Image (cartoon, rainbow, N blue to C red; front, side, top):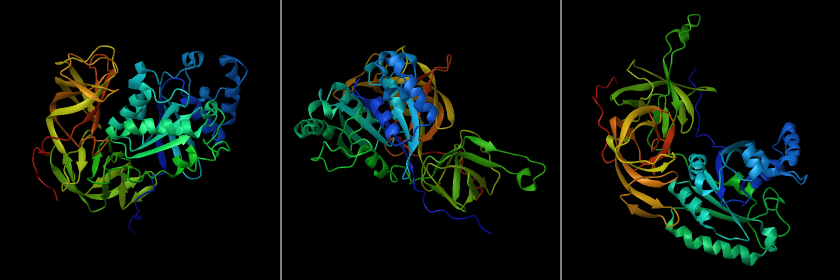
Length: 441
């Protein structure tokens, strides 16, 4: 009996982040989502009540559900990225609560890097701030497909429809300069719960969904790249179980599919070598299947015993990625010591790590205006700019605009192993050139 066939899976996990200026209510909004959707355990509710003693006033502070560090609770600000998980009958969610302070821009980039959707909060009293623009621009640079502008604290402006439209118009003047195609505006009060999970009686002039209603229904099935099969091998799976004949000689290649579709009987090529084979079996956590899709985690068994190890990229030979040693990328610098030309780092790309040197600082981006300043002397902490790198051996990749998984990387400082930058690769300058093309198929 053959393995069961799968139709393309319903991508029922929405990853989103909250961002915006300080005190716009990001952590409170997430707390309200968790609280009103009844996604909290009893111990979390008890801890929430105990935390009232920390913040003072005797009132439950919903922000403390995400502001886990004591320094965050004492100052009433978000410093680190906090991840929370919840589910409704319609979808599962992974939330990244990211800081609003300028000095924590790198934390915001980290939390938003895997998001399908970004929520930018705007205080209805203050309107669109520089941080509102900054974080919207970063969401655009990271090519996050969906944006929600949550106009918060509407209760403090008397639920003014006019004020809501003023903020919307100000935002829409800024958006055409960015590559944001799906933008939703929602008036709400995170503190009181209006239009967060339940519709508000205070906004009869607003006919759109609540925030949770939008999160449950926004279409994200097309957010993943289903063109061009890519599987970075993370682990060569060799159980070598002497008591099970089927596992005694088992050799599978495990990883998360970074792009495309793979099917039993499909031809694949292993890069950098260029050796090729045919997919014999596909295994998932739910058992064997005939086909699998990005972003599933799988183990492939091939028809031929070719040389594959961690860091190998398995691809469709008819849809090859680009490759080379000279790279151009946009980076967010995350270390107190500035980035300068000539510095050497370890570049981690998918499951492969290679030595790299920075050969040029091309520009530094002014996040407020998105205008580049050419040839800066350095990139300081939280700066975003374009650089050129040369790697010790070729890497194989797609541009970030095509594939967010194979088009991204991090830089690691060799001595301390600190992550110093997150990078987004520009489209490859040339097609891949395997070391040889000795096909096993």
